[in-house]
Length: 265
Image 1 (cartoon, rainbow, N blue to C red):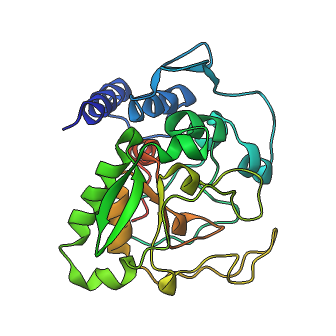
Image 2 (image 1 turned 180 degrees about the horizontal axis):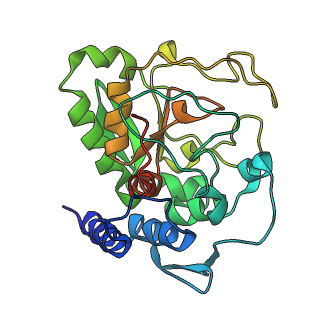
């Protein structure tokens, strides 16, 4: 067990002990932030005075006090915005409600501090990960490469899944989210797209802002469950669905576990 995993397990135990035997409830913002801090010990020291104290550079404001609607949060959310919606993990498929996009709201300021503030900085930390006959370039920051290798090893036990996994549609690509001004998580080498042949994406299906086509998914939930158990969330949990997309967001999965939220009844 890595130091970061041990730290997260200890934090989880402490929070569970503080909650006592009562039924699980949504964690407070302070508890969510504590989970966030424990998820990225490589970069975040602690939360103090409404800010994240970082190992390098100035602290990051957790809540800038601005009121945003859903689409404004997608474009320029702060740390608090990124933790609002609870991600439902598990081996069961979900049908997302309107504008339920847990994880699609991100703090670009935080992502740049976790993984690199420029394409050049991110590229300096990309390392090769073998992926079913391909070699993917993935960030080593925050242990993403090791997490993806663990996903690969578990998926390899079921050869029937390979057709969904390869060829990969890519990992690192310094670019903005389609139709938005903020950077994609692909920019940080911390997101992976699977085989586009099996993908359903709301834009490719003819979607436009304010009009999202009916949800579809062709990927087996076994793949989703394995990714989630190693810290990756799935774009198929989003109202603005992107079923080939996975990105490393372990804090959201731990918050869901703490809240008792599951995709399975």
